[in-house]
Length: 419
Image (tube, rainbow, N blue to C red; front, side):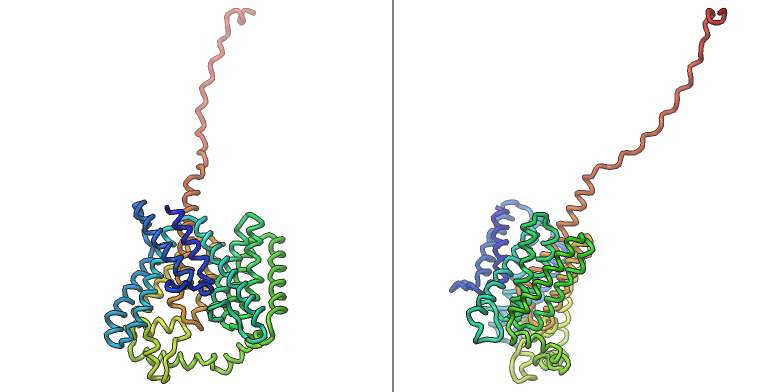
């Protein structure tokens, strides 16, 4: 039963990067359907086995944040600011994401299963990349930015960028050459697809994710380093040759946006968010309340375009601390891993942090799934290393030297004396 539930979780993780391509009427995205199926099977498997894994501080922190969000939805936020539909919808998403964290922790207790979920995410990102390229091939003359069907270009680029360090990690840890090359093939696909989105934040996140390459070269042979360099150069050349000039020009305008201080209009929203926060610093404006918080200042509602600001304005300083504790616990778990996995965790969390800066991702599935995978990987690797150390044969102690027996006296017979 656990294997069947894990299979459903694997498909959910696989569908996550391309979930909006297939939307089922009356149900929602394909990942929503897969998630409901996986949750039902996971609960059934846990009941049948009668065992539950003890939570780490990461899962506990997530639970505390969701509990705070519940009070801020049905108590503080709703009572003072209303907007029942928006607030309850976002809170339900938090509850569903907490269930996803539990499933990953319960169904992927070893490194093989966690690695399988990493493969699922990268494979799903490859599907989204191919669909983006297909959209460009069919609509190239009418648009300057492209994304897989149903996706916002910025969100898609961020998701594809997060899969880059995963693909590289898999390519250097798999022993089978076919699996290594399959993981490497994601790089050129992602380079082209991220470029087609024209997302400046996505490109910055991709560069952050590619820090995994120099971070792991010390663990590679000279031949693998040369192959890595060839793969990266070929991927970059393919992207530059394939991406249209309009998308490249938009990506190249990042420096001008920073120097002008407009950040594509985000700076004004951020200032309004800070001004609203000053008025309600401790408990915030309630789950989903950023829109209402900045409306009197901007004269219109808007999301924060910054995950950190979104959370602190909605949940207040108290809720923001709980939210940070969740990710801080994931970082603490990364610190317990061996060097290679630890560097992988650093890069993934850094990439996620870059994604949080221009996007509102506090209720995005990937923002919760990825740290859950890192926590699961850390627990599995540390446990496997501890078991290997315990089972390794101990070095036999040097046997104590036996005391020499006293020499037996030489008896000379009478015959010998007479001779």
